[in-house]
Length: 310
Ligand code: NAD
Ligand code: SER
Picture 1 (cartoon, rainbow, N blue to C red):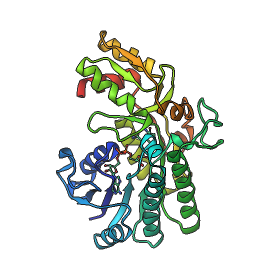
Picture 2: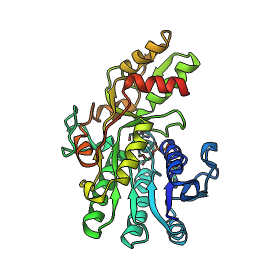
Picture 3: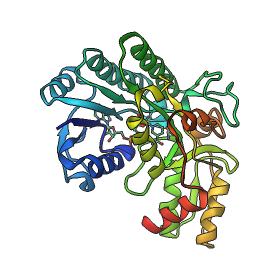
Picture 4: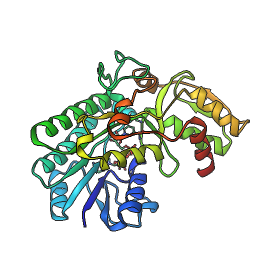
């Protein structure tokens, strides 16, 4: 049986990715791994191992001894947390990637998924419909680490034939797992407050447009990219991906359509500067052309799913 490892499996994306991969390929084929001792209840149905992405020897031995052939490397510090601990963010976000890239270079691993982010863009990037190939001068430690990671993925692909695939995820919105310290987390927190019937205190200004996506679309995109024939995966750094672009005010209005009494106030903090450096919307036409990407969820559809399922 071909074994797949999801490293960073207890987080916002990993939890849902493990669930979906297990539905598709079987429970025993997908090994969830994370620094945490225990995994969330909803992924207790299959194998779980406590692994530190920074422990190179432990990760190498596990992958080689267990014949793991595909790795989804999700362990990272996100934008807001990374700004508070830049040295460690750089270490975690880069060292774990090299460990897995080297295992693929040595032919132990056949295929890697490594996520990038809209954070690779910066204040000098065209903000609307940001193209795949454009100015990239990120001003956050998180964005710098993702941009460097993209360059290394492309380098290992071109020089050593490593099959590594990547998406520049927008801000992700989900109800099965909580976000882990990003600038786009407000767009998840807002639903918890709406359901509790409490006024939401938003840490971004009302007119801050950001690219976002409902988790179902993000997981489907990830698996579609990983299953695409190698000749279709022409971009070896990372693909732009777009879902829905909205401001906190747009999101509040969409929630008020379902819950007319919902209230919001705006008190921007340090995350405003991060959001201001990122695009408003993304041009993902290359993902559509190369591997057939089509998002399914619009703003109202996403809001209904969140309010129904939370
Ligand atoms: P998250 O913070 O929710 O989860 C990360 C997981 O990694 C956590 O469970 C954490 O315990 C684990 N982890 C941390 N350090 C580890 C280590 N040393 N060894 C093993 N596990 C460790 O993050 P997420 O939102 O699920 O993001 C996953 C990846 O996707 C990250 O690379 C992130 O940059 C990227 N991404 C996420 C978003 C988003 O909106 N969620 C957007 C763009 C890119
Ligand atoms: N959602 C992520 C963050 O805000 C973007 O990569 O950090």
